[in-house]
Each structure stands twice: as C-alpha cells, then as structure tokens.
Amino acid sequence: MDFLNFAFMQRALLAAVLVGITAPAVGIYLVQRRQALMGDGIGHVAMTGVGLGFLLSTSPVWMATAVSVLGAVVMELIRWYGRTRGDIALAMLFYGGMAGGVMLINLAPGGSNANLMSYLFGSLSTVSESDVTAICLLAAFVLAVTLGLRRQLFAVSQDEEFARVTGLPVRALNLLTAVTAAVTVTVAMRVVGLLLVSALMVVPVAAAQQLSRSFAATFVIAVAIGVTVTVGGTITSYYRYVPPGATIVLLAIAAFVALSLLAAPLARRRARAAAARQPAGDPAECAIPATRGAADEVGV
Amino acid sequence: MTGEPVISLRGVTAELGSRPVLRGIDLAVHRGEVVALLGANGSGKSTAIRTIVGQVPAGGDIALFGTPRRTFRDWSRVGYVPQRTTAAGGVPATVTEVVSAGRLSRTRFGLFRKADHAAVRHALDLVGMADRARDNVEALSGGQHQRVLIARALVAEPELLIMDEPMAGVDLASQEILAGTLREQVRQGTTVLLVLHELGPLEPLIDRAVVLRDGCVLHDGPPPRAVGQHALPGHDHVHPHDRHTPLRTGLLS
Image (cartoon, rainbow over all chains, first blue to last red; front, side):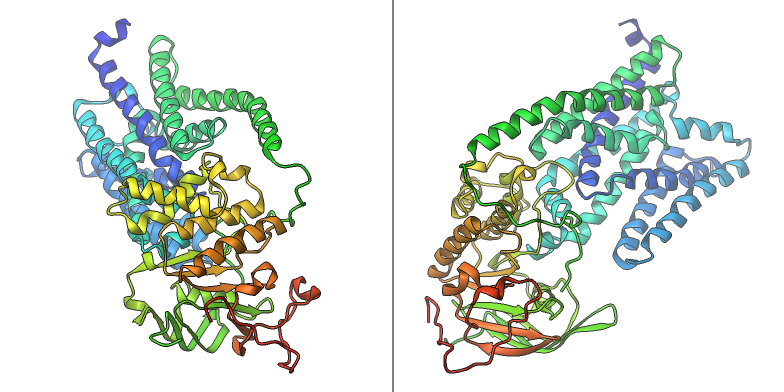
C-alpha cells in the first residue's frame, strides 16, 4: 500500500472513486432510455471545450464542462424537434465538436495534439489539486441529481409518454439528465479520457444487469463495479506501466464477461422457479410482435 | 347523466405528418360512464386518445373535468394506460418499481410515504399481481405486462381511466382478471374511456361505443353486438342499428 504515500496517487484514487460512482449512476438512466451512446457523443463535444480551455488559458476541466453541458442541451433539443433528421444533426455535432477541439488546441500558444492526448485517454497521474476540487464539486452535483430525483428519472426513462401524462416536468428532467451526463463526462475525462468515458457509464450497468432483477439493485451493483474497476485500474497502473484509462475499461469489460457467464445458470434456475409457480395448462398467449419497444411510436 | 362531462372533445382535428388523422371529432364522456372507442386500424382511435392526454397536437376544443386541456394540471385525477406490449425498459425493474412510477403525481418531490407504498400494494392486489411484486417485469407474460401497466395507472387512484388497447396481446385468463378489476373500478364510480379492438369480456361493462372511421365519428350509442368474428384484427366495427341490436346498458346506467 506504499502508493498511498504519494500525493499524486491520493488525488488519482480520489478521482477514480468519484468517477466509479458517478459514471454508472448517470449511465443507468441512459441505458434505461436506450441512449447508451449519448455519453460518447458528449465526450466528442467536450473536446471543443478542452481546446477552448487551452486557447483561453483557463481550466480545461471547467471549459469542457461548460461546452459539454451546452452540447448536451443542444442534443436534447435536437431530439425534441428534429425527429426525422435528428441523427444526422447529432453526427454533425459530434464530429464538429471533435474537429473543433483538435483545431483549437493547435491554435493555442504552445499547444499541440500531445496535450490533447491526456484528455482523450485520461491522465490520472497529472490530476492537479484544482482538478480534484472541480471533480469533487461536479460529482456532488451528479449524485444529488441521480439519487435525489431517482423516482422521477426512473419514470421518465422507463416510459416518457406515461411520465408526461402523470404531470412530471419531462422536458426539464430530460434536460437535467443531459446536463448531468455532460458533467459526468468532464468528471471522468481526467480518469479514463473522453474517448472511453462512455464505457464507464454503460459497461458497469450492463454487467450489473446480468445479476439483478430490480432497478435499485442494478444501481447499487453498477456503482460497486464502477468503483472496483476504477480503483483496481488505478492501482494496477501504479505497479505496471499500463495506461489507467484503458486498464479500467478492460477491467469493466472483464467484469461484464465474468458476470454474464455467472448469470446463465442463475437465469435458468429463476426460469425453472417461475415455471414451477405457473399453474399447469395455462392457455397459450397471443404472439407479441418482437419489433415493438416500450417507446415505439404508436400507430393509429 | 348530468353535469359537466369528464372528457369533452369538440371539433377536434389532428395530423400525423401532413396526413389528417382526426377530422372533427365530437365526444363527451360523463362521470361514471364506460365508453369504448372502436374502429378499424388507422381510423384514429389511438390518436383520439392521445390528443386527450396531450401527446398529439390537436385543433379544436378539448376539456378534461371542465378545464381546457392546455391549462389542465390535475393529472393525478387521470390514469393513463398507453398502448404497449411491454412494461420493461432498458434496465431491469421490478413490478413494484414500475407501478410506483404511477404514484408520483400524488407525491411531493417524489418522496414516498407509508400511504404511497400501501397504494402500490393495493394496486397490485387489484390486478392480481401481488405475488409477483418483486419479480423483474421482463419475466412476465404479455397479459401480466398489461396488468402491470393498468396497476401503474390505478395506483394514483384516478377518477378517470384512459386506456389504449389494454387487451392487446392478452390471454383470455388475464382478460377475465382485467375485466374484474375494471368492474370494481367502475362500481366505485371511475369514468373509463378505452380503445378496444373487440369488446370481449369487457362487453357487459360498456355503456356506450363510439365508432371511428377515417377520423370521423361514425356511430355513438349502444355498443355493437359482439359476434365471433369481431376478434379479427382490422375488422371494421360498423354495424347497422337494426331492431335486433339490444340496447345495452352498463352497470351505472
């Protein structure tokens, strides 16, 4: 445990823990509404913020937060209004954000793509005192939203139309989810990097789903997996010369594979238990078209 | 049946894309009534329902409990069952978790008190799903999914139930259970407007049938007589009102 004596490792571990908690906490709602790749899109947009931070010699973390929040809000607006061409507009936003970041950072005095690398793939060992402050504040915001509004966010992510008819402020909640996801992206940026951010939002949730039957359990298990892999990856990268971001993501995927293998016999047992509870001679059910999802547009 | 209608549509029009789907619908549902919306696929049944709950932009006048829909905020009085084949989302959720979402309109800031938890258990009892409360909704059958969706609408103890094809893909056993649930709600004075493809086990409950065709009201009166072939999808529920059609009255007439 000698790594705990180093200030840079203390900062890195603190950042890792916070990311391990917050990324799956937001990611679960994105997965629930089947927008698992939204974090990836925000990560692309955040690059412009990082570039802008370098150009204006301000903190890249706060600038990335500002730009990715703006990008997330625009993405949400596109989802409302641009139904048919929405995906094209989103593609413009993502790649525009990425290209903008590369361009701005090259325009910055003394800037080069080498600076960008630490944001693209994370750079835990260079997390500074002010980065830690920013990450703590942002993580507190993310947790307040994802835990405090869990019932509302669950309802909106489960069935948006139903949530609107119960009178929930669905637009405001959707915007809040987008903003929270954007904040999480910048929290995780220094740890796993913008290109791998989305993995930490999605993979722990996907892994947790293999075991869980309830949303609450999925949430808790996903956060536990998130913290385990971020801390595990950070410590591994201290002892072995491996990039922490990539290590963390690979560990998360390993957890997913391991839990999937574990889940198959578990699912069989549950199915048998359920079958035993069903009375014999139950009439066959009408076939349900497999193509219909919960959020499908209902025909008339 | 006197007093202000619970649902009132006057000259309601709606378009999907640029295609007119509703072309001037008039409809009034009074307190305690059970009204079925019938019609072929594409006749505008679902769109009519969705304009009432504000999910499709519409022209004309729509009022809920005497309040114009645009200014109506009292959504806890309305229980809505959207047309779904599943209650599941992208993440596992238990039956209790899904049904609890329907209770939010009765809570302050989403904080659940004892009465809210009790209401969730009661709603599950009403649809006969209490024993599956802690099960993952993905493990349920089609009929059980619908029962969960109906429990989610009932958990707010609404005065008005609006249901879009609650019997779609539901096995007969579940249909009977749902008919029983609905009968109990109607007995307690709940007003019901529902889209149906066939009257089925609900037939004795229905006071009035409104038949749509091409976005217009074709028939508004006693429900058409149900015969065997009614169940066929796409079947046009249009019947001449001959003297053999008995006048059907619901429980509260």
